[in-house]
Length: 149
Image (cartoon, rainbow, N blue to C red; front, side, top):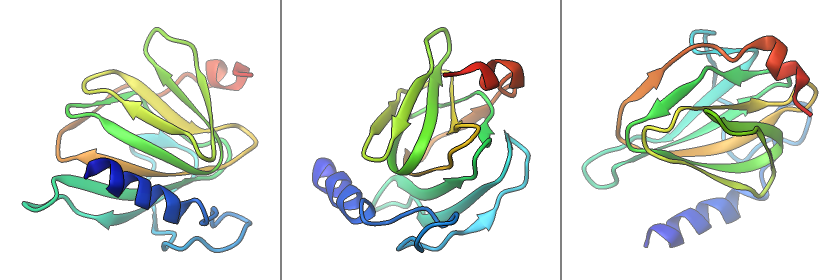
């Protein structure tokens, strides 16, 4: 059942595009997030709150170029469905992965990681997060981020 839900969400979102200089997304852009646990411009739109029926929050995240989250971890993990653009995903101690429209990223429980756009390209994704705790950590070092190729 979960696979059907994820595939349906992904299929619907594959026709959506980022609201940054492109066609309007099928979902609202959301609120510009305060720069508390990230750098750059990020917009968030909560599409579904976790509740007693479905224990997952679903959010749309739109990152302008040169925006990235701090290092963090999710106690129950998270799935990212990349719907537009090009971005980065990195787990602590591993090389940076380049993610593109159509990619699915599994952020495993309690694995320290960060994700965001590239310095020149925005990225949009749907985040599916079981109700859990997110622990925010240090910012990504700007010098290391700018050196990613």
